[in-house]
Length: 132
Image 1 (spheres, helix red, strand yellow):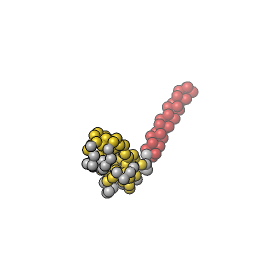
Image 2: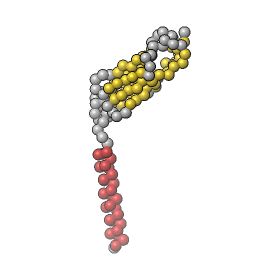
Image 3: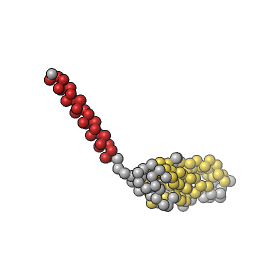
Image 4: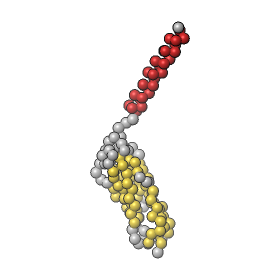
């Protein structure tokens, strides 16, 4: 009889601990925006010197609050970013574009640092080779 009571007690304890774990998990998930990028890198391949090229990085806000891009900065003056300025609602899409001026011949790798209200910066990469 004591063995049966002990087993029932363990089962009840197990169920209550499991229920608490689920409620803690739900509470631990903060309401926040979340940028889900289709891709974070673009390879232009070979491009002609003097002809600017633009990569478009598309994303979805998969978070629970509006996503706001506060800044996008290229790693040098040859890479100019532009981006969606208005807040991106949950499940809505946005774009970040990076234009490279292709002034100098040779292989290049450049970055765009994107700052948002999601609490982390994102690094987008473009690369290619400028030919005559």
